[in-house]
Figure 1 (cartoon, helix red, strand yellow):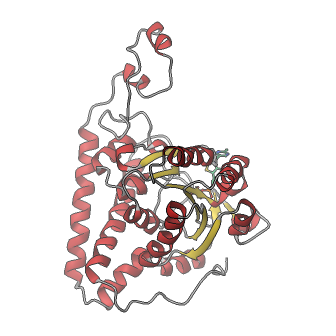
Figure 2 (cartoon, protein in one colour):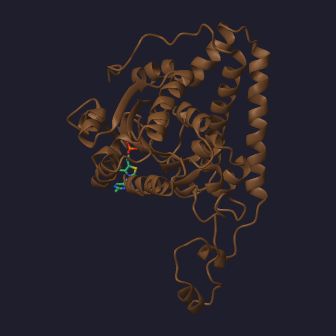
Figure 3 (spheres, rainbow, N blue to C red):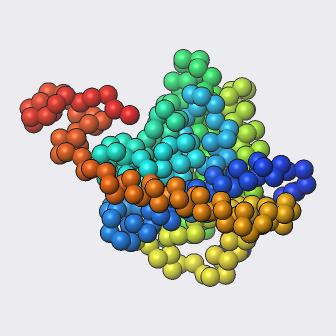
Length: 349
Ligand SMILES: Cc1ncc(C[n+]2csc(CCOP(=O)(O)OP(=O)(O)O)c2C)c(N)n1
């Protein structure tokens, strides 16, 4: 696949605060190492079910977390771990969720695809492609109705742009001028299907005007640039009644899920995208422009790995939930639960 047409000249590095870059780099690295630790546990048979990794897309979740104000909401897909980590969820609880343990983010009831932490602004990972888009529009409608000033950020893969529910959600957001930004994480493939075999257009933001959404589109190579451009879309949605559609050209370096070896792409293509990898570029900038030593970079990595080792240990030592715990947080009528001999459903997180 040739480089996307939205490729622009290299991002400027002058005047960038090295301490800030180091902080953003560390956040991206925390997501990558979390995902690598999860992949290892999965390969060892300690995690079951589906596991979709966010490796390559970290700059998007990190930029988002930087921009969110209290009350703002993220509604996303099953590729949700990166958002939880970026939004400040405890990595032990995240890992325990993957292990299906009682100490997990949602008590082990959700698993990889259904992370949820409303206190951190994460209003769900959703497994049905496009199904969460009207849900996100509903969140934004609630904000507008209540006048709470919050913005909803709805993340979707490019594959979700070919789903009816997606367009129903965008349509209402545009009609009702809802405080929402739809962010397409175009990682080039929906499972093994490349974009050119999914849709007749290259640029997915061509659909924005038909819903009266503002739009922007760029290659995610730089965390500062991504943060700055996302900030504009969020600001317009929050303050000017201008909902937006943003297409972010990115790449997942692993397969669709752990069961996909990703053989449908060439080594050259992967190498091209590795050069754009925001994590790799941030590290190169820290080393090259800001004179950070190998020892300092290694020290950051060791600290991050230490956190992930602790998270894995926590998950492994945590108890499995009792069978009746599986009813918690589910939409089950209390009397049905009672008939089945269980406690009424508690308000869960
Ligand atoms: C409605 C629906 N159809 C099919 C699936 C199976 N499925 C799971 S992920 C996926 C691909 C989605 O690709 P994309 O939206 O580009 O997101 P990505 O996985 O690349 O992040 C499909 C078809 C599903 N979960 N939901």
